[in-house]
Image (cartoon, rainbow, N blue to C red; front, side, top):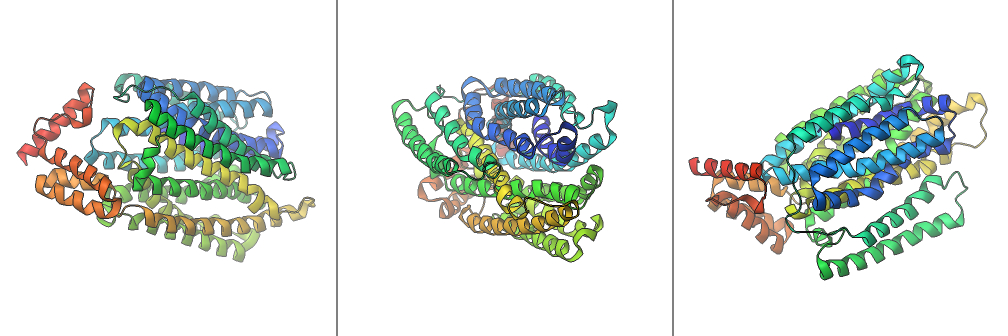
Length: 528
């Protein structure tokens, strides 16, 4: 959780400091775009590989390597001598995050039994909210204070004590785990994934600056051919030695396939909103970083509160309706914000933004934590690393796509040559235009969510364990209506194992602490 917090804070803390970095470091718009998109690009390109390396060499080991590398890269960002060094350090930081972040969900998935994961994901949702609260506020305060004359640099240096603490705590408390079946790293798969993502995201990121050249369109079209070649190769690889980089069988699990689509599109909406929101407040309205950071606090608090409630209270009772409601609530908040931005123009105040931000934050909180739970609910434990890497990859890819689309939906409506008095009104108008796009994307998310299972399998398993063997079978049969006959049988088998719990060790767990968890569960079942 400490590492997840550090990653989340790093993303949000940079957004709020972008105008200050541009002014102090003399960075061009292209370099500013690369400071944000470069991290997302390296992160997305390395996530699947990072997840698979954890499965092969041990999730604790890769986690600690990632945390250490992320901390070193943060120091390099903080002491960057010029914009070019900062961009390069951000790429390194994204690559190290790709080693660290997939292990977080993998360790949770491999360590905790199904009926306890919901609580852990609820805590994860709260950490997401805390990161969302802390990032903008910390970024605003550190930039405003100008500690030791370092300007924006402390926003990266703040990661050093957190990273060191995560390393020490990780060495002490995390138990090593890996895939029970020996796997090999698929180097050809790694090359194809990286090439395809670069061919898609690089032209999107630099397209506007270069005047949208023909080669950019050709590169984006060629990316889909690379992805098609990747799928064909991974199928052969799975048949030949059973060690593909991407476990394509995961996409036969309805909850996983639908969740991946939602994660991608959700990442697009977030990539667009957060960057244009920062530019709107600091350049369009002329607010200081601290003013902008404090304005976002109601949003962050709403995300944190709703994320905790959604997993613990709402999803077990209402299932996917909670996620669909979240998409509609978030879209409603965007439309309220759009109306207020149009009505009040340059004279809008922070308190007037509070209502739409709280509504948007509540909607986002209803989505973020239970979505992860739903996506991973039907994934076999031996593929936890690969699945976690895919989840984070598609979200980061969506985020990078959103950042690329900022050139179209935001800067595309700002004239190239503006006099000083025209800058602020132009940015306010561009923000309103971008919000229409965000609302439309949230509508697409709502439609995609109809393909999610009515109830995440985790909650069904937990109920069956508490209620006994007979009801466990009923739960498995009920879930068959949502996830198909084949997967229903698999889930029913799992429910039977959990409810019987007659001396079995849970799902081939190799580690002593995991066996103890299984024994505790067996004793609880007998006493019941």
